Length: 229
Image 1 (cartoon, helix red, strand yellow):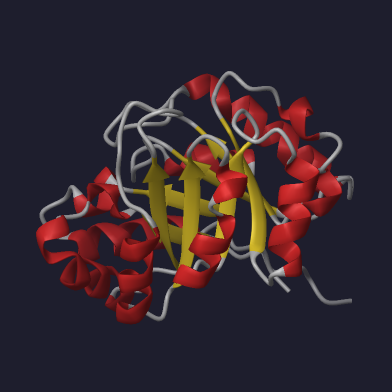
Image 2 (tube, one colour):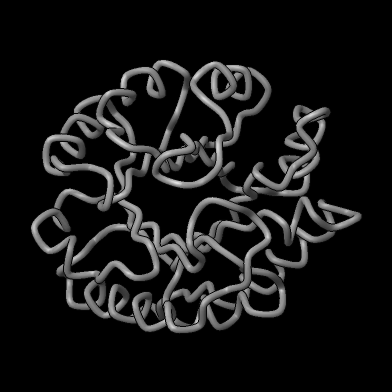
């Protein structure tokens, strides 16, 4: 089995006045996952969507819904987002005081369980929960707003996590979000990412479907099929 590379368009950059059409456009173009950024105006300086919008999106797409909770005390809202139809949920290590409890709760409820790390947060903050994680979301910008510039120093954090995966210390996926486009996605994939979140690079382009196809074309070169014996 080869290494799967998934592209996850982020609706943060989509036109919310025609959100269903925007989602259908990238779904038809081959998007693998749909990334939904939830911001509360406290953990990050922005406010976006809540469970009712996630529930509405669930009705309009068959894509996996990857819900990124950029909120304080995320444990209070997990059940709401699960009921709304989230398939993946990530919480920030900086915002959740009881990661072990949160991750076990997500897994017990059949949700792909992840933790997100801000650019300045060391990978070592996950040492005690790596065995519980289905994915780690490495932020390559400071969270809160779309359209930010990629922070190159975060590539080393991706490499470190990839080395852990190669040593079997970590068995989940490596998701990366922030400032990724067709011009730098190769560097992120070289570092070891296998889920690429892209907002402005897809929905910010005149032709979102074509932009997604270009990202998939580039990522296709990183699918490695082991040789059979």
